[in-house]
Image 1 (cartoon, one colour):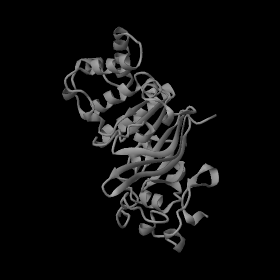
Image 2 (cartoon, helix red, strand yellow):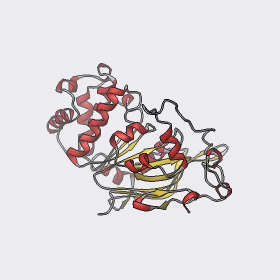
Image 3 (cartoon, one colour):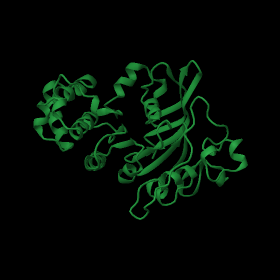
Image 4 (cartoon, one colour):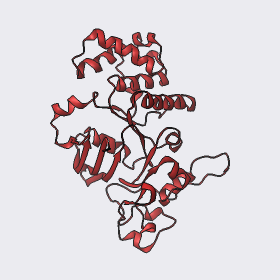
Length: 316
């Protein structure tokens, strides 16, 4: 079966007075139908830029330098704005970073959900209202939330409303950018379970972006690890947590608090600037297993055993 989404060598740059800021400098991966794929990495590694590039939400001074984005074999980069709008929300939708601040404060939740339906379909307002009430139920919210305003909701309720708006038309693909940021751990767990339930109930495919590896362990099937605008490892979440291949992945996993390990380990040094990425492997200035080849030659993302991919000279 063909993947529902394929990204090939996607590059997203931002113009600045110091030159191009290469936030995303060549990303390639595919997403299988009816799976949750996670995208993880430190802040500034290009996670949000990647998903905004896929959805073509990059605005000046940003621009898509090159690449290919295939959704069900449709190249999104070759679509006109009105053609892309016809696909949004019906085929794929977006849960933005900081989504709790995305609700309109002066109209009710019901009106915002109805607007999402009527703006992207020919469905009449009466039917859209019924869809809104059913969707609130799907995300475990009572019907009375429909008549409330954003300021009357808790952070977790706002997040559920945003998720509800994104799934109201039952799209095939949902891209969620940091959907549990700024929520306490109990609400996070509830939201993650809601995302998993929606995937199981409606057969949706979800791209889940988070810097929180514990959240990925809870909900995703496949995991993509990013560093400095590049993808460095891809594999099942079980394989990466059990046996990470890339030194960066190993250090990320080791930095997770554990009941068995009382001491935490970190990653030495700082992430590099996208204005001036290091030559060769971009992780080599911080890598504990650096070799002479690492500073001069950039490793490509190669397929390893059991469908895993890694970009590291240790495996060449």
